[in-house]
Image (cartoon, rainbow, N blue to C red; front, top):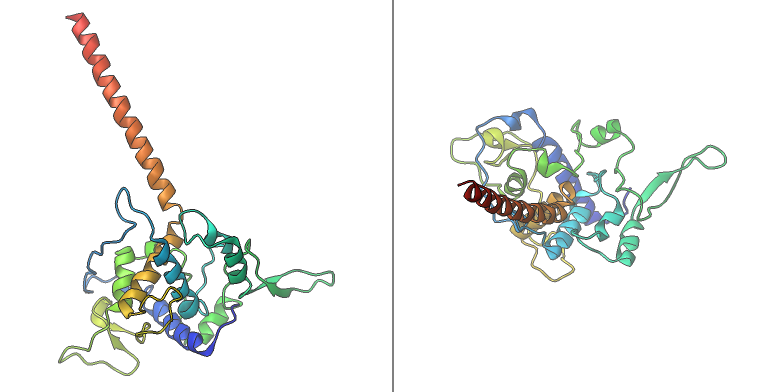
Length: 263
């Protein structure tokens, strides 16, 4: 459980209902949705890396808009300080963890109790169980966001497009109450109200919090939660590529020498 303010709570509630209703509905697997534009993500490509500032801003959007309804159950607070991630200091991680409460126990009397989270703890679910989550969200279950960019075709491009792609419904398209027009959703109709509004958060680094910026940043962060070892994996892959190139060169010249000697 996280301690959060009224503004963050209202924004998070909107985000929760939206992602649970939009990202993981069977209808969303249909093929009539607009294809998201291919974004130029810094983490793409053989030499791609995460933007540390974008990761930190994205975490802020997650914490202030999403965390009261969506968990990150694959991520521990201490992961926020690891190389290749947001790289918060140990002191910053301890302060972040202390904003959350986790269940622990049992104590000497067999009872469970709540305590401040520690860096070793994983991000707690905002709900005690799935039934409580559904009851609070009109029957929809807010999904864990740890692997959200890998759980849907289009990945980061899709998440970014969905969050920032709301439009006025075209003429002739009827929208019943409680639905909103988003061309990236199958059928163009989505139950999620617009989740990101201009200046919804106040970035600690002074960056202007436009809808586009927040969408890019939180998607950047969620791609990291899905692939926290991306930079290490790419470095290893590059080293293997160099090794194979050298090995292939040695084999080529060795075989050339052998054939030359035979003839």
